[in-house]
Image 1 (cartoon, rainbow over the protein chains, first blue to last red):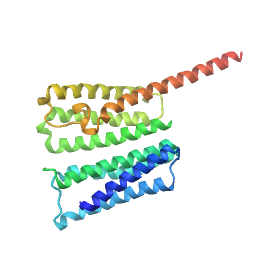
Image 2: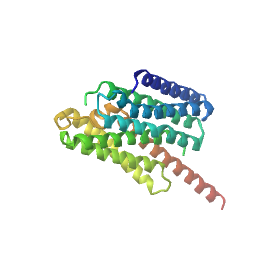
Image 3: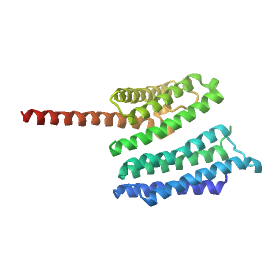
Image 4: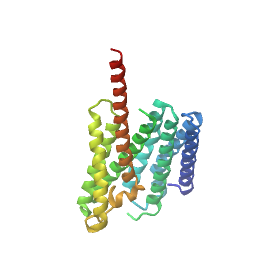
Length: 122
Length: 141
């Protein structure tokens, strides 16, 4: 993991999550902004996968359990597309809230991955 | 599915994935250090997956499954939560239900309560609709 990139990822996920909460309160269904936001969260997760695969070649290895890290990362990468599909079936303000839930969950998971990579003693 | 039911499914789905992943990791790497706790975690994870499916799947047969799995989870988090506090030596390692799910922001405690409320409301809504239909067809005689 790259420190600054990881924090940027958490920030993006939080922003997208909060934006979706705002749109949901306003009664809006999934729109271009919320879907693009969730797509960005997913893109960053895919980038994180690439970084995590390449990192050991540069001497960047997790302090904690690699297996636990990868389980989090793979699980996280599944969530945004699954949530988007689930949200688009109904397209109501609750669907937007579904997307918010997914984005905020990703923020928590990436933060947890950060702890595992940089701090946790295996 | 009504909107709030959709949220329930998403949160259950994420919890199920997280519990499953954590359980697989724990059993694969350090089962011996807390076999009771980790076996319990595995059962809990399986039940969460089944509950998520039961909430989504169509068909009347799934409703009892949803009631049973969510009810089981609530009992589980209350029982294990209590046990993990009064007999902590049985739970040297954290699990999904330890400390009433504190490791998951108490979501394992709150979620089954919301799930049961949602199931009960759904059943009541259907019963009311059936009554209205019965009254309507009766009045038409």
